Amino acid sequence: MFIGTVVIPVIGISQNLDDTTPPITTLSFDPEMPDGNNDWYISNVTVTLNATDDSSGVNITYYKINEGDWEIYENPFLLNTSNYYTIQYYSVDIAGNVEDAKTASCKVDVVPPVTTYHIDQGGGYYICSLSATDDMSGVFATYFSIDWGTWQTYHGEFFVTSDSPHIMRFYSVDNAGNVEETKQVIIHPHNDTFPPTIHLTVEKVFFNRWKFIAEAYDTISGMDRVEFYVDNQLLGNISGPGPLYVWNWVCPDSNSHSVQAIAYDCAGNSASSNIIDIIFSISKSHNYELYFNQLFLKSLKRFFYMPLLLILEEKELNL
Image (cartoon, rainbow, N blue to C red; front, side, top):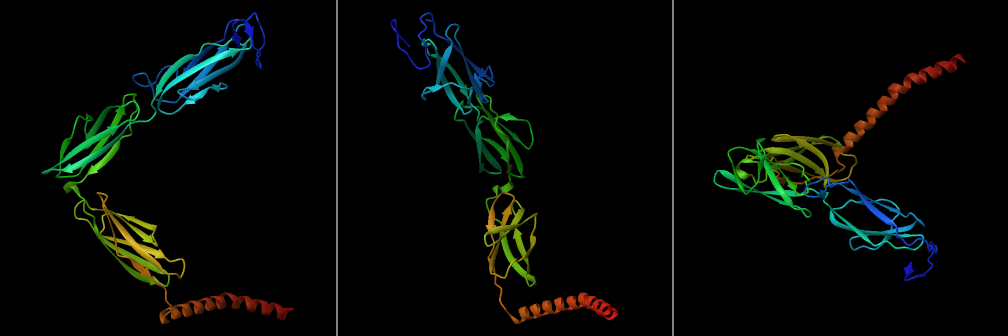
């Protein structure tokens, strides 16, 4: 680089006294212009630097993002997180001329807002409220619809009757133009916060086959499903209004197991059944079953092997 009229040699830099003009670096964004609202980018931005020098040629280009360190530019880089970006950059030519640092900026918001809801019960109606947050560009508006009706702009809590179920849909848009995916919640009559009732019984079908019968009721929002667990592992799932849910299970071993069922109503409330322990014990009935199985297998062997033995004896006699 130059200090007054003295040239200090640097690796990769020549002492070209005829070149006193620094290089020129340009910066470009892709997309070229913000693709969101209010000068926001709502997609990833690719940054490309291009340096030219008409005399000795470009030696190196530097850049840094926000308060980061200076880095050597080699390839286009990506801005793929929501942030306010300030990019500084400059180049040095082979003669050692240093370009004045330039600055470019852009703002990126690639995350949509998040909307939550809250429902309280009034006298014969529900009080519904929505709340939206956005950590980058901020919330522009929130919209809602009841029972597939027209979309309305949310300005504050609203009311729906509690005489029947309702479907509430809602979403928000931020100031950059990101649109949240539409959410949906079913508002049940009577504001059902009570869990269903469930009782589990078991019947032994065969030595290792069992039938579990769950009897589940919910008189407010109605039953949705019953899940069956063996040793705390979900193995069965039966949906429907009930009240009887029958699940057949084949035990893979002769170990003891614990079985339990969990009932879910249409409002999302759940209740666990009583726990039933399956204990295998060697009893007379068990011995009778084993004896019968062994006798049956021996009969099968004789049925299949006797004709084969007769054929072999006949061949030996012919020989």
